Length: 73
Image (cartoon, rainbow, N blue to C red; front, side, top):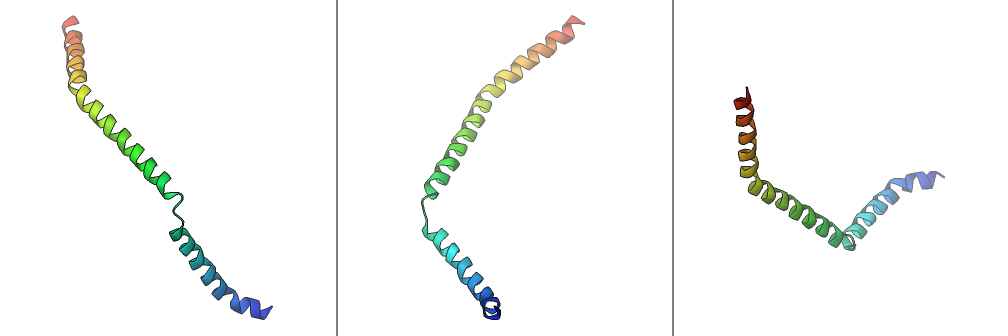
């Protein structure tokens, strides 16, 4: 039992760094992460583009609404 306790730090060290090595060598999930990041990037760019195109139109529409509201009074 004492021998197992004394070998515990060494076994934990080797198991941890073995796990890290296996994670570095495993590339199965890498393409999924890249695809997800690219989809998020495309979505954000599309939102920015749409907001840029519609921003002036929305501002003009809001100005028309607020000026007509002040004219009613």
